[in-house]
Picture 1 (cartoon, helix red, strand yellow):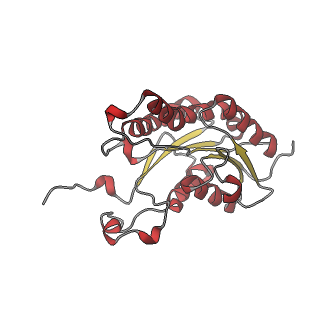
Picture 2: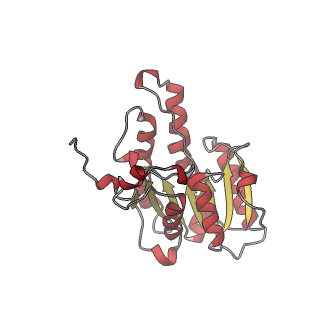
Picture 3: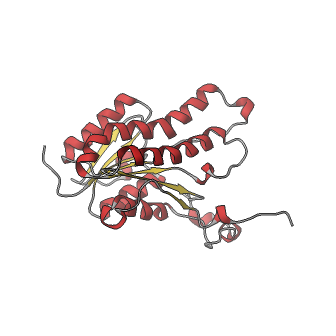
Length: 244
């Protein structure tokens, strides 16, 4: 095992969207990346071949796969300095039609997986005096109909974050990002009204979240920040909306 001169981060849900943007940003910033996602997720197409990238296929809700993934990352790079728990799913159904199996799957992927990765990565992260970033959502603070499972997991992630910050600190810093509307599809197809409803004047992009994640993983720039939840939503959760 050769120790990478680059700091190394494991990013879950790295095949697309926010996870891919974070992985690419960190790679450009000089990190080595262990990119974790499901088989057939397009992981190999999403990230270009690089000696500083290792692709790891697995289900984040599978405790054994999580252990293998962290072990592979550490064996590949000889270190682990950062963990980004980004993987998430939504099953949007009316309460009466949301099965227990659907509920449990969302809990397992969105919330339990973050705990599993933190537990598996604790030892190498302590050694590196590293950092964990969880990706929650403004759904932890406000909701739309039929999002019970998703919203519950995102609220749970915010709480898990500050609990881990106390349990793992001071060796490991743990922070959360709660994105608002982050468009991962065709940004050009968004309407003017989509942008105008945001106090910041536009809908968010994955790179907006990657920027904050990179900051929070960098101990030189954010070494005094832990247990915090950063709402990155263009100001939407601060906007009061009344019927005219």
